[in-house]
Image 1: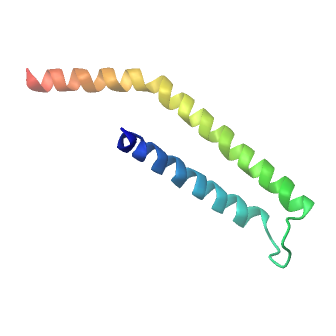
Image 2: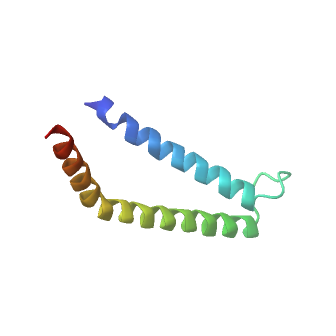
Length: 82
C-alpha cells in the first residue's frame, strides 16, 4: 500500500524542489548573511505564492478536462477493438 503513493510523492517533491530552486535563484542575491533580508523574504513569499496559485489553476484545469480525456480514450479503444 505505501508503494501506491510513491509516484505522487515523487511528483510533489519534484515540483517543490523546482519551485524552491526557481524562487531562490530569483530572490536571493547575497549569500554573505545567514538570515534572509526583508526584501528577499518578501520576494520569496510572493514567488512561492505565484507558483502555488499557478499550480492550483493547472490542477483545476486538469481535473476539469479529465472526464473528456477519459471519454475520448474510451471511445478510441472501443472503436479500435470493433
